[in-house]
Image (cartoon, rainbow, N blue to C red; front, side, top):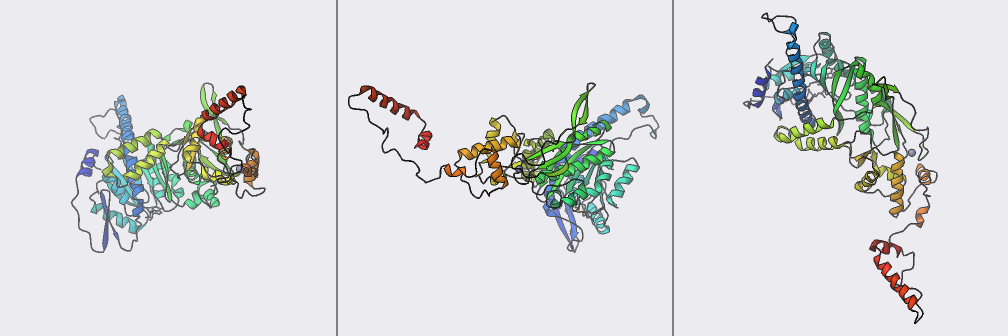
Length: 531
Ligand SMILES: C[S@@+](CC[C@H](N)C(=O)[O-])C[C@H]1O[C@@H](n2cnc3c(N)ncnc32)[C@H](O)[C@@H]1O
Ligand SMILES: [Zn+2]
């Protein structure tokens, strides 16, 4: 293994270009150039450059703190009298100097591992593993082509077996990266054990039809959680489903998780999760997981954690939750609720960490071809409320056939009432808020009343009609509203028209004059509306 300083030096020295062997295609991404055959027998997806760039920026940000804490721990151990190095270097009591290692379980061409080795300073070893012989041959060829044999170890085996073997031999990796086809589910139990205390799990899952689409049966089979296909918040639900699976698996091993960043990107999700040893904290997981009740007709939803925080003997513990927080029927439109989950209900991101990662990317934009997108995503993520899930204002308005207010207008009504609001990186036009659905409908009621709402197709006995009734708005009442371009009331023929004062009646003349002043003092909008 190379010393970290040597790694940093190697990473900065430009490698001489090597000739591309006949029959192979060379692809350069970041500091790596990989060779793959035209037949593409080994998987390579150029679209995932964003995923790889993002991962490098996140691991670099995380590693700075992790390495410092590991070295500190090592120094502390070394300072203990029975651990001090003896003249005999083979002293079995001497703790090993911490090594920074990455395990990429499903490596294909080795591109990701090679980029990690070249672009993340202070990495001692990256194990690039695949169970396909052709992939391992490609990894070996690419390792040699990129001159990283000192830091990248090709490995041939089933990812689970390699990880379980490492655990059984007392070796754990600083980072475990899983980037499979489809779900990472089958690799999660080994991964949560194979990652070091305080280490980082990086997990990609594609197959959003399962995690966030119509395949809720498959979602339960693969992740132990029901997805909610009709929910507007299905992408965040997918992230929370994966985090819940990781959380429950870590708990079995007396470990707990802290999500640093959880992103829904194009056709997949990618989460970066720190794993810690700690049976006491693992027992608090019930406070951070629970069910989601969603109304598929009006999009109102509620979450229900399994446990709640209680104080017992001066200590914070997990108490039993009570509920459910909703009845069988939606309180607004009377449709039956769908029950989804269980999902993770804690924060998706560590805001300080997301800001740090963004600062790193902004400091080194040349290191990441996709830096503009990374910066944008990290900015939105770092501004997101930790409150689970979100609403589509347009979808709420669709239920009652109202025109949708502009997002800032709707958000400002919530903010004015003292609630918190944010966007979400998962989809445009969606709002996260700690306001309850009752308040959202209250705001929409006022919006409807103010905006000259024209009812269109609110079907008789539909959820929309029931909802309007609950809001105190009869579905037919809109015909009494204003219609653009329609003159419904007489227009004053002249200003200050009306019964004229009798000639010579000065008191009446005085009254007319004061009326005139009062009219002039009214704001123009009000005067126009009253006309
Ligand atoms: C999506 S590709 C990996 C892409 C790669 N991480 C990258 O960034 O370019 C998935 C790879 O996983 C490998 N694979 C699938 N199941 C595996 C298993 N159980 N153990 C090891 N490798 C596996 C496949 O051979 C394939 O090369
Ligand atoms: Zn409803």
